[in-house]
Image (tube, rainbow, N blue to C red):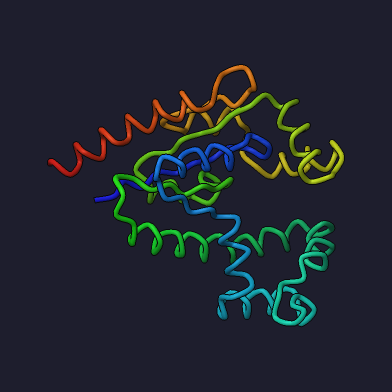
Length: 201
């Protein structure tokens, strides 16, 4: 049986980089943000629900018009919550189907909102990636070409890093002081041992 492991962290923590290290170790990774984008463009039921919420302008030539959606949700927090209430369950269902098909000792679901969406209930363990706030802000500004105020607004939509890390089973510090690979290898070895134990029971 494949252990189901979550990988989470706040914006700019570097969880995608950590996920890629796990992938080099042969561990399959489900990227929830990418999957959500794909589902919004290709899942007929989700498309219909989004059109119903945002109107016919939500899609252009069959693809979600992200610019239009961003403009609407920017001024309407309720609409953003309604959109999340459609996208999160669809992504959770898709991830559950994907996890069922894996045959490695463990598989990872990488997602920013594991605790916020309640999907930790379907996972065996959760790994958290943390970094100092100033570093997270700088990384996000560089990556997305946005200002500090916009980064802080996005941070406000997520559970605080302190609370999130307390809820995790393992924590990786991506603070540019401690090496990432030895931390990942340590957790990898523990998860392989736990997976072996669970198959021997």
